[in-house]
View 1: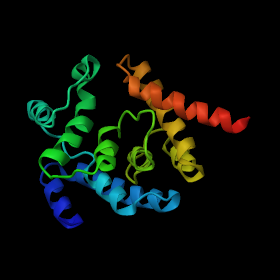
View 2: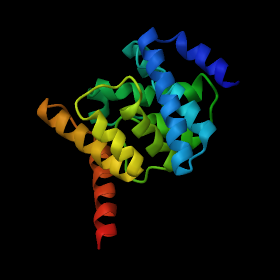
View 3: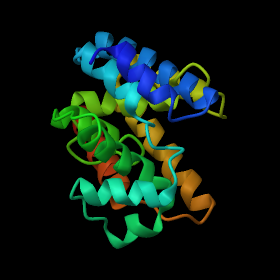
View 4: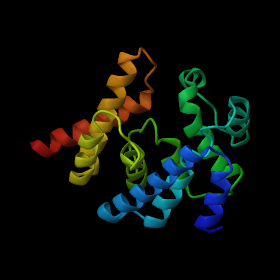
Amino acid sequence: MNMKDYETIISGRMKAARFKHSKNVAREAVRLAKKYGADVEKAELAGILHDATKETPEQEQMDLIERAGITLSDLERCSHKLWHAISGSAFVQVELGITDPDIINAIRYHTTGRAGMSLLEKVLFIADFTSAERDYDGVDLMRKAADKSLEEAMLEGISFTIADLAERRQTIAPDTFAAYNEVAAMKFAKKK
């Protein structure tokens, strides 16, 4: 399949606004991939596919997750907002036949992050935060951080996520804390 084929599949699975977001994330992922040396084609593909199941009914998401052989933790099972990233990674494997673990993991961890993220995973994580249509308080700081370094942007994005979820008394994935600690430790080590 080529990018047009993937866009056709994705556009049929979501409303126009979400498809616009996916296109913007793909564009930003390409920009960041070029800037930081990630694979541009993989970045574009992960960007267009990252929200493939965001508007999919919950039962269908669970079916995809089970068909892909993914076991959810108790926290993931009760955190429905995390499902689309997990079911999205399942969808690209089960329905689209994508086997590249870097693309699969970039989609799976685009909302939570995790320790040991690949360059592509970081690119998609940041592209989702900074895509053209985003207008939340602090997006300009995120965009400036993304132009300095992926690690700066990761720290900014994960800090934003943790603060937002804590303020709303929502669960926070352990992967998010692990990603934060890893990036913060790297930054600290560079200062020494």
